[in-house]
View 1 (cartoon, rainbow, N blue to C red):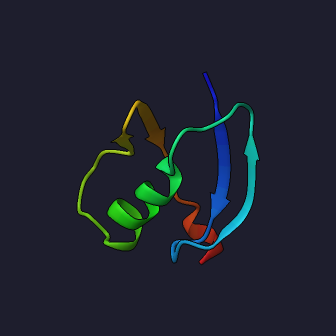
View 2: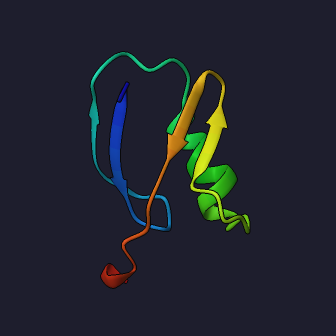
View 3: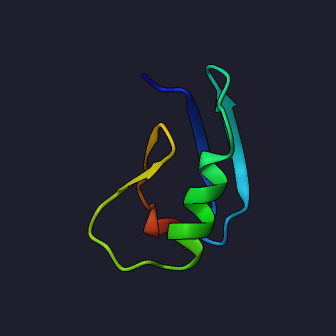
Length: 63
């Protein structure tokens, strides 16, 4: 189920976001801080934050 969708820069600035249901806590902030900003080296595009599993993709042509 899709609870939240966001478009953000690699620096963590959220350009657009849409909630489809109430989200408990701040799982998107955790993803940005723990994975994207710290550039954690991983081949995975999934991150678990509490009861949520977050997925992301990079659009490198927009750099």
